[in-house]
Length: 390
Image (cartoon, rainbow, N blue to C red):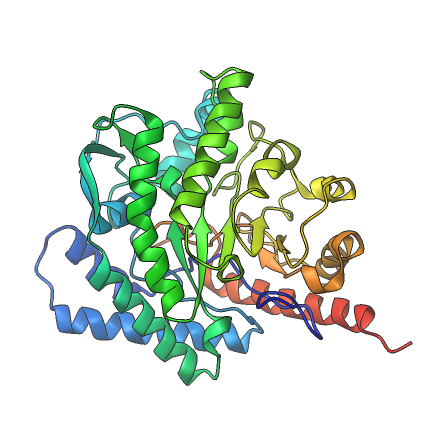
């Protein structure tokens, strides 16, 4: 058995980001907008918020816990904080959701204003690589490690049931410095490897966040051959970034979108799965509770996962305030166990519940905890059936 496989029950986890408490958001807003704040108070507030969150995760029945990504305002700010060679470009057009936004302009005008973009403590600003990439996040990642390990210890959680998310090379920014995209992604990969090694070196799992892989297959300017090459380039860079790290210490995560919306213009799991499974990870997390994708579990009727690898399908969604019924969650879990075995399925969420640091998250923080409780109840129902004495 590998470290992420089940032994006598279905394990539960989630994807990382959780709604931040408002006292922490107030301090983060001051810090990242270059306003006066007390660093000691900030550090104490952050450590307490992580401890409270881990305790709540355990109380709700989450087995594999994390820090809620409480130290990170969002992907792009995180990149600027931990990597040299990038500058923010407020007027740079973001590629995400292009087809979707064009098809539903009235919906997304309101959505971006009130939900995804409206309550961020730091504006969501794309970043561009303008010089040599160099990792500078040593102090920041060590703070994350210390906070989550202290919180886990206080909650009675062993280190190997703790994870920290970190971005993939594909999620870092736009290249204007390196001669080729391949050179750029490989340079980013080599530097991010330093953060990954720090996390795994602390004895905890690392979640490799790559929500950008499926986007390749809906990019309007790419033909089929270009899509294939770009996906291969992502995989190559991912494995460079993960070089020297035991796969059993890595969870790969991808998703199709972070929002509630029509979600018509998304890749399918069959398009992505072949590339996912080439990445050197011990488990693979993906959306499976999203009603646009729930049926795609059938792909594992033909796609066989290697020995010792674990699937972590979403059995609760991050884009709805409806709390899933435990019986439905159990059904979702068992669809996968029938195809890949009970030891190889970990119950998870589709994506994070606060990918940006927001005062108002799409799913209310009180509902998140109820979803986690329902996931544990559903996992217990599935466990009882799967490990029933004959």
